[in-house]
Length: 277
Image (tube, rainbow, N blue to C red; front, side, top):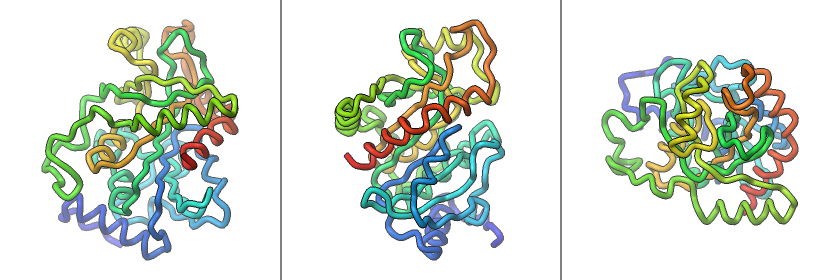
C-alpha cells in the first residue's frame, strides 16, 4: 500500500489503526512498548497475532538489531494486550513524528493504559546496574518535541499539562504489588538525550545535577503523545549499566542487551503486575 503523505498526522494514525482492526486487533485495553533488550516479553502472549511494522501503513521498523519491529496482539492476564516490540528511535531519523508514531496509533486504537519501557544508564550513584526504576517524571534533553507543529485537536489541547504524566496512583499500586513479591522498584526521573552516541561523563554530571536518576534515548516522545491524549502511563526503566563516567569505563550496546537478558524474569513480572493493577 502506497503511503499518502498528504494526509494529516491524525488521518494517518487513524488509517494505521483501521488496518490493524482489519487484521484482527480488536479493542486492545493495554499497550506496551518494549525497549532495548526487553523484546522477549512479547513471547508471553499465547497464540498471538503478529504483524510487522513494515506492513502497517505509515509505520516502519527501526534499524536497531535487538528491536523486532513487530506488533504482537492477544489476550494476556485476562486482558486484550497489544505490544510494540521495538522502536523507531529519534536518533534514527531526527524526526519526532516517526519516533512517536506507534503511540499515535495506540491512541487511535483507543488504548487507555500505556506501559512504556526502556533500558537506561543509571545516573544515581546510590543505585546499581540491574535495578528497575519506575519513572516518576522526565527531563526532555533531546532538543525536540512530538507536539511541535499544528495541534491535533482530536487528541488533546495545544498546551497539555505535564504535571502528572506518569500516573501517581498506578505507581503506588505497582510499588506495593512488587514489594509484596520481594521486588524492589526504584522510583526516579528519566532524562532523554537524542543519541545515538552515549552520553559523555560531563553530560551525566549535568543530568544528575538537574535531578535525573537515569538517562536514555527513548520513552519521552511516546509519553508526551500519550499524555497529550489523556491516557494512563506507567514508565519502567531497566537500569542496564552505570552511566558514563560513574565507573570510569566505556559503554557498549551489548552491555545493555546482556542486562536485559539477566533481568528478563524480574522485568516480566513487574510488567505483569502493571497489567494486573
